[in-house]
Length: 363
Image 1 (tube, one colour):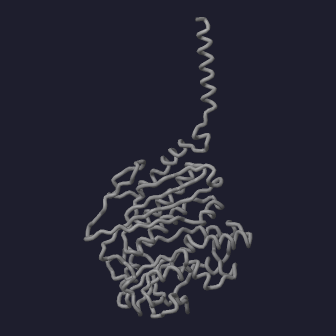
Image 2 (tube, one colour; image 1 turned 180 degrees about the vertical axis):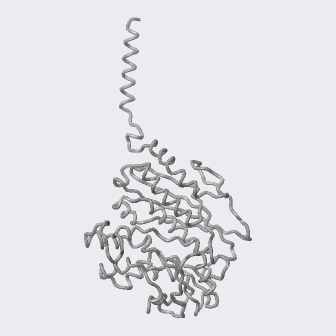
Image 3 (tube, helix red, strand yellow; image 1 turned 135 degrees about the vertical axis):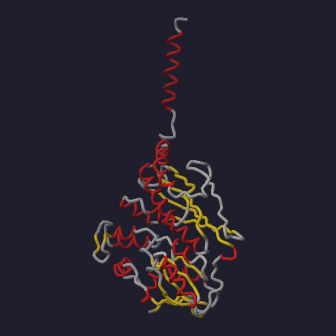
């Protein structure tokens, strides 16, 4: 038929119009190609955390890790999960994203160290409204650095693009750490007794806790900007606040074969909430605050907000990011072991018998 070519042409044009009207995933806000580019950019960062126990490559459906069991009679897996919290808001304000990954690893790995675990591997989850390959790679570079500091292989992760769920340029992060410990060497705090010594390991700043208070104080109440240089701090306010969380894997590894009775990771809740978690009934921890010098950010926060000391110690780590409880006889050995690997440590208090209080702050 002479009409056939025109009929075919009409149908083809109609099909093209229908296809043009159909919605695509990219038009809905999810750019899978940008996600693929992010994976390519982060590969080198991830691979530098691998060790001989990693049995999988990037991109698999699950991370494979061969469990090292040398010198372990009854292996017990220890896991921990956490996020970075509202410290991320500061990263958004400063458009600096290469350190919050360290915070993410630290919050998870430091927790499992308290049980005496040796870190094995780590997984991360990053969710954002719109994927920027460069920004995701920058974030993951921090995660990889944290894993190197925390002796953990980064064997898995997920980047979720969720348009309409997060504000422009915003994201959230969560992490998951796994370690192993011999059952007979699990640290519980059950053997802590009166007269035991508390050894403090210094923090690098406020780590990843108390940022809702800090942001309200500095950026809402006082109207300061992150780039404000603060003489007392020797750096800008933003630099002091974004300083990443200390990871204590090296210090804890140094005392792995010593008699440590209890370990405390001083996170949200400060001294008052975290220390009692390892104390037996009727025992309290008495601290001498003159025995350590906290980073200047704490004094600056307290004076700027006219904040009570009790509020400071119940919100922040006050310069002590981790504590170890040991017998007086073991204190010197533990101090030498920690200092022997280049880490700082000092005696900051002792365990006392007390019924009505669990934490005593004194001078």
